[in-house]
Image (cartoon, rainbow, N blue to C red; front, side):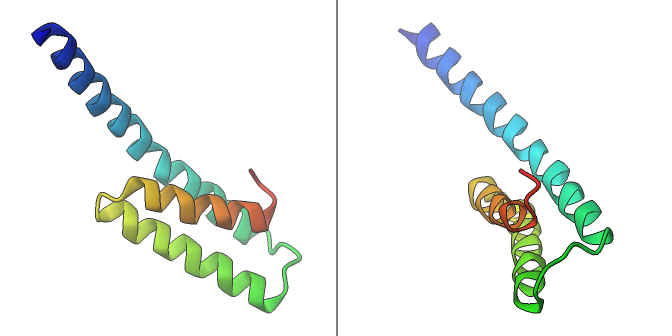
Length: 81
């Protein structure tokens, strides 16, 4: 039983670390897409910029699910996911 609990905790910790490391890759993809001046309305560009900033703030706060949610919304607007 102890082995099962220890294994589960270790897997969750490793999964969280892997998940956290994907946030910067998504931010970089958004930055690269924005650098190409995509055809976006002013409102869409403002929304992408806000979502990108929110994603970074959530990432720095350790809230990786919220970060990924924001970054994925930005990627959807940019059509890069």
